[in-house]
Length: 337
Image (cartoon, rainbow, N blue to C red):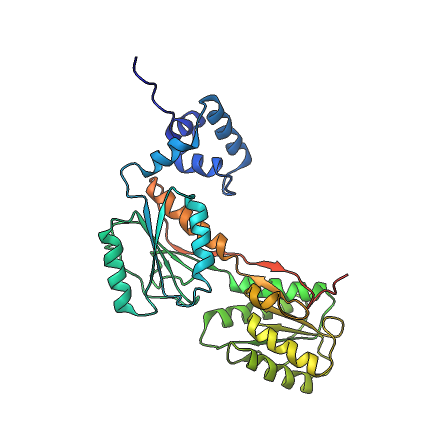
């Protein structure tokens, strides 16, 4: 007697009247699917006694089960959470990720690209070390390519990057909600898109509340030393300042040092806030540092999902998509009870 054919994801999708990509998202609990659609897919899976193991085999049928992650982020500050998010989306044990570090070198990047393609990877995620646009790899690549963190300079590519303008607004709105109205902004190098975009969001958030920034945006290094020096200048010029919003957690740590030296109580007298939610800094600060998390794991998951969807026949798309950050409140803006 012939063995019955295993039920596949395609069978579930067909019964539910949706695409394979939508069925996969629905069964994996992803948030791009309407609840009514999700319920229809779940009911179809139950009706067919669908098991996820055939799903893994079906997804990888005719493929190598590998994805290349090409990065220029030597320190791993950004690529590691993006990689974790991508692996989470791909599913443990279902897809192998080859991680190659080009170290910011275009020649090395081309070498790694050729090596990945020779291994017949099913798709590529290209991760930059900052949010400034980077050169496109071109359109001769035979697999889906998604640019993560650093967008491609070619608008016909698909890029997924943090929404730093929105993050600046969210940070200001939090400080306003804490009753702060005299807010200054210290940030990093003006050549970085992240610094400019966050400053734009900060100004927009204050303008919406009918307020102005105290002084000008202070641009310089992404360092604790700059945070200490800039905060000292600000507090000397504007002793009535009640909040310092910093463009990175490193700068904010420096501002906290100066506040302590000048005996300005944080957060009672002065709120201090950072960006990036680099936990080795934020949770070891005294007080612990409120920060905006760039949601990099979600960014990695989104990039991986778009590669998967393209492999399932869904059009990859083009342009730049933005991932919203999230506010992480700690004791530097809200007193701990």
